[in-house]
Length: 245
Length: 298
Image (cartoon, rainbow over all chains, first blue to last red):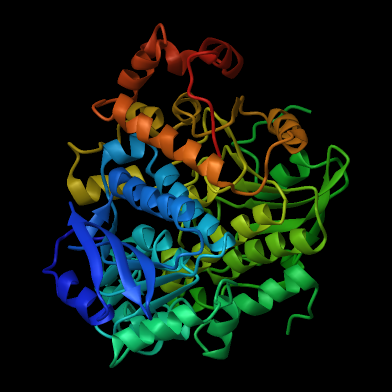
């Protein structure tokens, strides 16, 4: 949850051109991205953020508005969420006005779109952190990431302060344990990221949009990939009285 | 029987809120399903991983219920803790429960389980919305000492109803986190009155982020939960409801975006004596707020 700005690695214009070679009409306003693009001859809606921007109440509401417009005006149109954020904005004003309600509203709008048959694909193209990630990439049908993307809850120094575990110990654990280390590979192993896209991004996006991933299978995938050994077993035991062993 | 909700443990709360003698726990402490991650950090584990889940009756209707234990790592969500909540919500769908009651007390993601905790909170959020889509109402109660923060503050606002006590707090980033990031001038976490005004139940009630405010009393929470279960509300999300919520949240920024202190907002709403709000008992407060507060939308 560090709010220290780090230089942007990825220019969203260049990414958009690579991702949507058939054309795109995406515009940026105060780090909020919205517009449309063409994929396989069909129009998709694009919503996102750039510049590692913190997600405050205004930008959460703007994203929700774009998604509601898509549901209302273009039933069934696929939605691509481009993720680059340092997390939720850490201001008294945001908390006073109920930032959790704005974030939840955004999440509910994505859920409504999914329920009404819109495919929703998330792509972490630069940075994803904690609160800003829960209502963007993690609420999509499936979340994808570029290999250079950074994904984490918070930096290891801050985590060391709060958990009172020495930073050296966390650094050591981060080498072998996906739970503590940032990076898309660890989220891949735990099921939080469906795939890491290498090579032809436009082709990867076409494939992602062609499959129905609307059911949440992340716990099962995390078990298959060995990153989360317990989540799926506990879910099955509680939901379906499956034996837990 | 009247007792403080704030001072009760998770297990005491769930027993007091549900019909007497009706609760049956799933994966109880005797099963010892503990966190697989805490041991590596030499941190203590809890045999229920900090959350009590099970089936019971509420006002004679079959429900699923969960209560987070603030006394264990502040009620924070790890891999097992989150999976217990997800499993319970899925069980509610399978068994067509009359509702799910979530007694939330949590700081959000358990940092000791960092990435696994973050994904777990996301899974709980989607499971809450899945239950709603299946027509099962989700009722959230917030009245514990640790409040309801982080990603779980988002999850709470995905439920159909939120019932809070004035002692309950609902927000996202804790005051300490904000102070650490942006300085004491931004948010003085030691100013308890300011913290309470900003995140407490009365403020949330006035601005429309909680449905009902009750006193710090397990029986008051129980009665409010029974009433919420009986409310004939539209459980699944609809475009119309979310457009109304969009407008409510947009209007909130227009009306209160320049406010510096929650008391400015209360004054704007027409509360006659904003500085006296903290002193009012729950009943007197809700009577005063009648007609002034922004109605809750979920």
